[in-house]
Image (tube, rainbow, N blue to C red; front, side, top):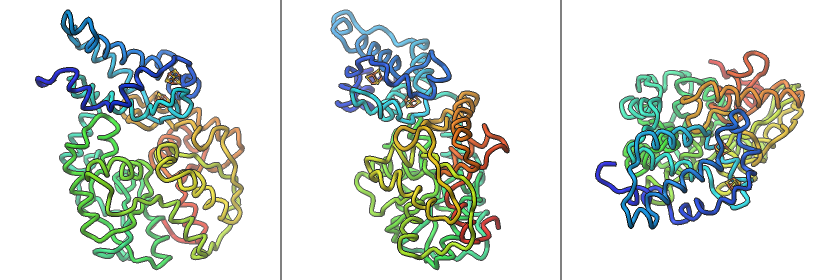
Length: 409
Ligand code: SF4
Ligand code: SF4
């Protein structure tokens, strides 16, 4: 606890509203019916997490603590708190159904931050990733000079431009096919755009989702400055995790509204279609279901609006000739998380995979042959669960295919 009291640490991480939220849980159990973790492991529940945390706060700050002194927060207590706080994808579904209106995803992140400050472990996997981000500027430990190695040589990237594309670490180092589709689309539209090249670094998603303080995020501040220095007004994202982080976390790091607008690539595509600037060459005669990622959907529906969060990607899919769009049993703000979020895939890969397995079952029930998404993490985790029984693609890949673009080289 580095000399700070429990109260100091708690006030640093929990806003006054969040302190009230801890008391607002009525134990109605609604959240248990939607939580993808509880569906697999009945011992873990968002309701109990709130109850456990409230008990700790009472013991540390209540009248007994003032009269008789605070009980020590031993390792076992911190370990149990961390175990519960990190057994969660931070998908926020529990918050959507919560009858007390608790903003659960933010509450879990505050708990994680406080646990780290209290001396609890962020869980080794996250500490390792944080170290790799500090050292290599990406969570995979890949050499920074290889960040742009996937970009085809014939793509023209301006030094500075009002439009920029931010692929993020996962696309650059793990799923370049998504980035290539995006670049080929931009190229076919003759749009002058820039990228950050070796000045790009991790957006900070993993850090923020797992208990890292935005005030300490010097690397993110430099990243935002690199965007500003290029005169960017529109920053395009094909990664839902980067998009959410840029939209909700970067302003906290920057200390106010960003001087540019983070835009989901699906919204950019939808706008191009509406303006008649995309002319599709091929039919994609397949039944396609759309998976709303938590980061680009539920987490941003109150920031970007439902139209951008939920409807724009569907409008893009409906515009592609031949595609028959079908809906999953749960969709939009009620969609069930793929299982990869909140660091769960790193911390508990088997649990993350089991959650994705349920998603694959949902897709099969619709008869869809293809699952489209806008999140590389969802794409990876669902693919890991489905093997070669289901095609899981990014919307940009489908659009590139329908435009007749060669997006694999
Ligand atoms: S955020 Fe998602 S995974 Fe976490 S407790 Fe809520 S519903 Fe469960
Ligand atoms: S839905 Fe909300 S009020 Fe009900 S048990 Fe869950 S956290 Fe508590």
